[in-house]
Image (cartoon, rainbow, N blue to C red; front, side):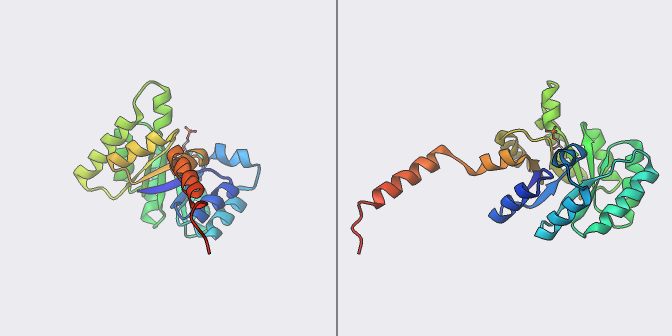
Amino acid sequence: MKLFLDTASVTEIRTMWETGILDGVTTNPTLVAKEGRKFEDVLREVCALGVPSVSAEVVGTTTDLMLTEGRHLREIHPSIYVKVPMTAAGLKATKILASEGTRVNMTLVFSANQALLAAKVGAAYVSPFIGRLDDQGQDGMELIDDIVTIYENYDYATEVLVASVRHPVHVLEAAKIGADIATMPYAVMEKLVQHPLTDLGLARFLKDWEKVPKG
Ligand code: G3P
């Protein structure tokens, strides 16, 4: 399973990249706005680290605007995936961008039927937002289960990228279902590393090691 960071913070991305567990990065306009930096500068810095998959979202709402932005974004670096919203205009843009060889991440997906459409137009990734469904009282993980089943039924190549992840149990459940990717905030990825029994165990080992005769 691939683990992505959902952030536009180059500091966070660099720190996780150095651990060796990071497979990619997703951004969205909200995350980019938080950094107060030029989007293209952020993208270039992240790609220069060697991160193999970096999703950058278009903000135009017509097919023409999405195509113009998407073609521009993909030229920035070969690691860029163009993020396109799940709308009728977005489906049309995705079909064209995919036919040109651009890898598209279809975002703002909230139903299995939307995910089916993303696969039909050749999206490389589909991004269902599970946390936002949970917020509405709907089980987001059921959606992941449905999408994985549908994609397996028809052997679609589109990868399921679990987005709007809020805590480690989301990652665990997504992995058990067999989702291809989970993207998460830095704080959630940090929690995947930590366990209090690891810290306690290490402290005890180091303490006992002091009793071992040296020299
Ligand atoms: O990047 C898209 C998604 O992961 C957003 O998450 O927490 O704003 O619902 P959230």
